[in-house]
Length: 410
Image 1 (cartoon, one colour):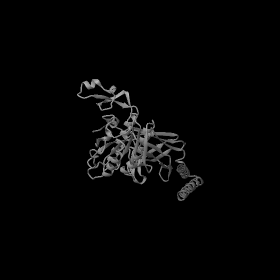
Image 2: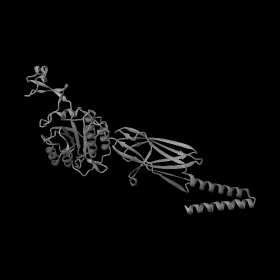
Image 3: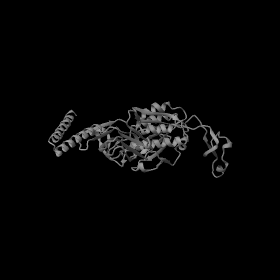
Image 4: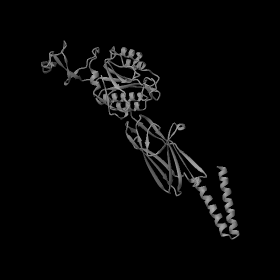
């Protein structure tokens, strides 16, 4: 900067001497040339010093939270709040690398661990420029926009000045949530656990179905119309007046077999878990979430609750989740499943059921019903027959990001 300033002073002195010589020699051409040169050097000096003064850069996201596949707007506003125009302004804003952005020039930059949005502008005095870009939320996660860097200078580019703006904006993209087909996984979990000692009291006004008569059943529960159409005595089964508690365990350690494991199988597993949790919470079932993945260095351990804030909290945890964790599903089941109180149903979502996981499930089934949801793939193994109370299968498909429903096969 000192050398540049010295060059400018030398140039101004030279043009000043030329102007002085012109006035002394009464040469209009020399005097005018020297004067114009001095004025030009002074203008360049002012331009170099004040080019970024009162230049404001503001980025705004239309939402700070978005659902999967939603499109949100990124608005960028640049204001030149001074009399001096800007012949050029270069903006570099760090943006997430995993989200497609439409409407701007994006360049990958490994040194900044993301991508860079480039804007090139020319601005008049007291001008305002607004640009709108569109972000396709096609990947769950927590994303940061910024910081930004502004660069400008004199019209000939002799001297450039830059400024770093530390302000950032955050965006949270929730995982994909499917509609389960057929719906009502909870209704398939409640029945069939004949080993459970605790019996939920049924509500006579809410009939869930019929079953064969067993010794001890009250005669007032006999469904005579259904019995008349059947060869056996049938009694009505009522929905329980107390909602079951469900703890969802998710194994994100998907099998890694070259050529067999899809690259995004772990992300699909997160979407399956989010869909199950959303379905249960939407039906008013107290639900909790436990995963082998980590958020801020800790595994997710969210006890079952019917609080209205439970579903948004769990979806946010799944959005910020890192699929890499230090704990195995077998260890998680032994630690957290062992704390589950009587009456809690367990749902285990996994792409692979190895022997340690099956053994941990067997230990819990002595007092708790277990439903397994296997994320079908060629590299993983489902739970062996008879090792769980109920088993559902969800087949991985390559276009899962574009589907609305999730098919459960018993």
